[in-house]
Amino acid sequence: MPQENENTVSFTKQRENENRVDSILRTVYRALEEKGYNPINQLVGYMISGDPAYITSHNEARNLICKVDRDELMEILIKNYLKV
Image 1: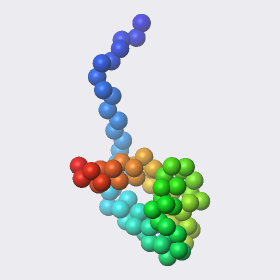
Image 2: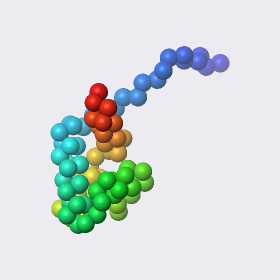
Image 3: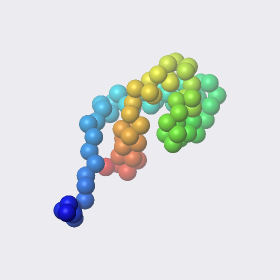
């Protein structure tokens, strides 16, 4: 019979350079803005669905966002939002 673990399991993941992710996110945001999209709505759509079609290919934004793991992006966004 497997032993039950009463401890909380910690989720850790090797982190990409936050500055690189920040730069990519800002570039994608600007590209979406330049093309007349609402960047927040488009990024949320991408984050929820994982479908890169939410991100314009203008200025290589789609290629850039695909280089960032969505879990890593969410982790950085939450960390910065909560300022922890």
